Length: 81
Length: 81
Image 1 (tube, rainbow over the protein chains, first blue to last red):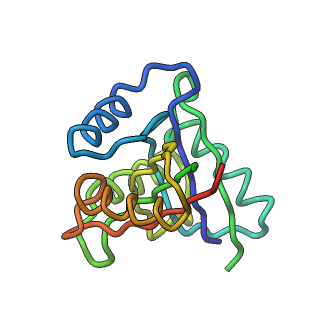
Image 2: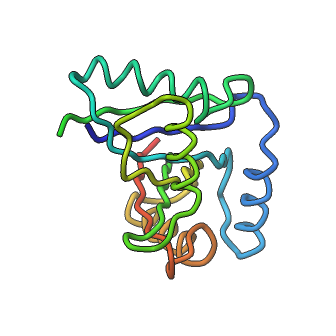
Image 3: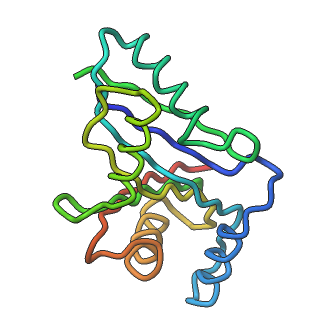
């Protein structure tokens, strides 16, 4: 299965990296940018007997290692094949 | 416009962060994981007169700041509204 995981700072949590990138874009002359957040994008291949099994495994990976549930949200897509 | 940008290490470029995460998942007991890569996921709101104008602006943002074209690939989605 091909898995794509999106990890983003939780709503309302301070996001200094997002602020820094937004400021840098403004300094480069890009105007009209707002609400910018920087997260992680993780892609992987997972051997699993079913899509449901893969989804449960990925959920555990996110909770245990890939995301910090205190300050980050995650979502993922599992694509058979 | 709502913009989602995905930045990933280029195919064939060494990805030490991806290797580290893959190893860590193995150490936690997750088996069957391969071809793992860690990239960045950037979301932002952009004021633009049209979707085409927004796409051109985002392309420039990626080339100038958000991605390193020498070692990273990027793709993005622009959603009106």
